[in-house]
Amino acid sequence: MAGTTATQSAAAAVNPLRKGLASDRIADPCNVVFFGASGDLMKRMLMPAMWNLRLDGILPANYGIVGFSRSQYTDDEFRDQMHRSVDEFSRSGQAKEPLWSDFAKHLAYVPGDFDDVACYHALREVLEKNDRELGTAGNRLFYLSTPPSVFATIIEHLDAAGLGPRTNKQGWSRIIIEKPFGTDLDSARALQAEVSKVFDEKLVYRIDHYLGKEPVQDIMALRFANVIFEPIWNRRYIDSVQITAAETVGVEGRGGYYDNAGALRDMIQNHVMNLLALVAMEPPVAADADSIRDEKFKVLRAVRPIERTRVTLDSARGQYDAGSNAGTPVPGYREEPDVREESNTETYAAVKLLVDNWRWADVPFYLRSGKRLARKKSEIAIRFRSLPHRLFGEAGDLLDNNVLVMKIQPEEGISLRFNAKVPGPKMHIRSVSMDFNYGTGFGVVSAPAYERLVGDAMRGDATLFTRWDAVETAWQIVMPVLDRWQNTADESFPNYSAGSQGPPSADRMLAMDDREWRKI
Image (cartoon, rainbow, N blue to C red; front, side):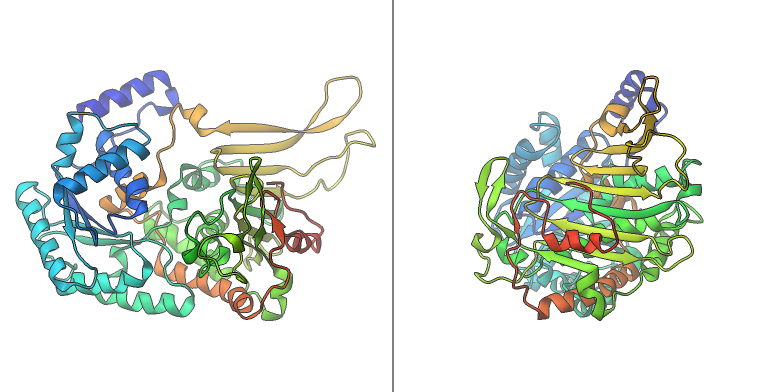
């Protein structure tokens, strides 16, 4: 604790923007159980996140970390695997002694199949041992980092083994569920029916790592902590909103999964839809989780359903062909391992949505996400309306619309584009930008999203997690498009080159509204 305070004091001395920040240490002792502990997410993200929470003095004084998966590790072998994961993937560099040896004492492992009841009783024994020896007080956080097909099985067996909230009389029991939460509306509802048999909604944390990113969290601060933005955050001043989640990578060995998912399911229905809700929500009545999530749900409820006759007009899909990434040749999607030769799965999806409420009537929200595009870029661009009357500028000067951009990745910051006079005797007007960068401004590198999200779940703070009513409504929004795409082959596939801006159909969608996409 003293080390954390000293670190914060040093940071405040260097950067006054960080002065007075309180300790983030988690109060409640607890066990965190990771199902799928031998998987890639655990190695790359989750264990490095837990290590950095310990390194920064955020984990509680009494904690246990338990891995559960099919791999036949002993406790020591699991600790060695996690040591290598931290050395390779942690933002803080290689694990150092003596802190690692102390941390490793809190790691344990239970091997077994997800459908083997006996393994859950073995898990219970480990958790009860941690309660006695590590002082974890019966508090349990279960993290499902597994294929979605076993979510319901794990939850059922947790309950049967006396590990669910109904049988835990000593402390609390919560569960984190990774996306995707269902593959369509019907499967999402079926999964929710199984979850709700064991865990009340207040105990369920549906994780979306986008919501843990610092720039995403700052959307609410930008809007509601600054008097200059909220008065113009409406249809009177805003022309349109573009939300982009572009990647340069392909399916990266996940062809089998991705070919049954696609960009609409994988990105638009969850990540990008959550960004829309944060941008368009009304001010919450309080800063607590339910008040914020109430407003996000209201926005999604107000999204106008896409009529089936308008799916081809208000959406666009694409699939990448061979091309290049940073000058290196890359294969087309249908040439990737485990992808069907005539696959109809989209690697690019774009939709136009309208929000039917007082604030946003007639303001289009354009959402897009794709793989193998020109640049890695996630951003939200708020385009303001044109000047009602041109007063300044020479005849040949182009007066651009003002644009506010919230940059999520790889850059993290805020940019405001406005028009200014060029120095000189004539009134020439040019577009200029004012930029803020989080890392430079606050003198820190933002922690990966999983550190924030796992820590919040340990605290019981559900603000950055998705509630069931919002998940269900997001599925309802995309289902007309998903149904049409699944039942209609796109004969143009593949229709954009790797390293390009995306398919021409996406450009035509905006051209019909006399608008165009921001360049990726």
